[in-house]
Image 1 (tube, rainbow, N blue to C red):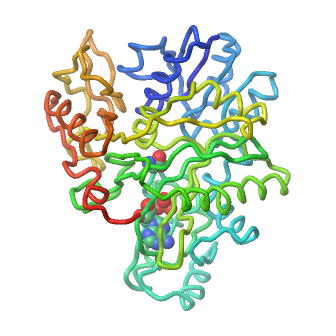
Image 2 (image 1 turned 30 degrees about the vertical axis):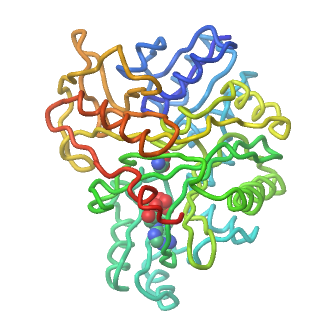
Length: 425
Ligand code: AMP
Ligand code: GLY
């Protein structure tokens, strides 16, 4: 079977890698892919925001299955368009993806269905922001409603700061595009957990949990990034907690979307804060996380094609997803300056064919120039490893990382620090 993966980051490299392990798959294509993915799949250039370009590739290549990695193609309706044309595709429709693409939709949805989340107010004007802020103590969180690649959340210590952040979102000076809706949110505290569920429109089943490291600096300091590393272990949450999250968050979301006539299929990524009042949803994403996926897929024992088929066919309740026991970790090597300005095109040294067992170097942002792999993004490599325990997985990933270099390379040396200190999640 021929499979097409849409996207070109570390997550898609991991998806392509997992697909290549499937006995059901004979050929993997990736659009646009990157320098590392090109070693496993035929890459086809595409703009992942351009619906027609993506549909044309599917029409020409006729894959038996298309797997959508990032949120942008979901937001322009790729799943709807391919389904309409009779192609099998993994991911949510444009309407169902609103759980990620519109924080306003997600917050109101959670309120309608009594899914635990921070108290909020939805504002469309600065006057409303000013008015609603009276209900919030500080710190208060200001969020752009639309997709913002991790840059749409500002934690404000005064009401004045919050008004300024909202003003910058409305005017477009913060994100480059003018926001029409801004969400004010109660500030929550606690450990964060990424809980991944596979959904088929009716059922939600657990894939795994992971923890991301969003800040660029060690000790969780500095600006937010797309994610500087992640880990996944059996013990990241207790079995009882995982059951609770599945029932009270993921399944409730699937039930709610179905009852509203917009069934949710694909991966539901629940960004959870473990607050003193219990777990609460910080955000939903409607796709695999990056870099969580690079860690999680190293532990996946079940054939990944079975996950995609169960989601598309509505048979997830008949599937049990098996994960290898133990732990996995992923450390991101990023370009100097990221998440601010950085320079691409730097040759990467040390990439070798001979990796230790259960170590994979996924490429997040690379390209091939004159036969040489060079940097081509903020996040460049996702060095991933699996082992019987987290310490061993991290040691393996860091041992590989020290062999790799490019000008300006930066990475966090403390991925997994909370778990290693045995802080509860
Ligand atoms: P989001 O894009 O909504 O996941 O937000 C990005 C990050 O901002 C989260 O991972 C949290 O660390 C932080 N954050 C978001 N919402 C809140 C909140 N209500 N209280 C505290 N921190 C938050
Ligand atoms: N790791 C966070 C995300 O994929 O959005």
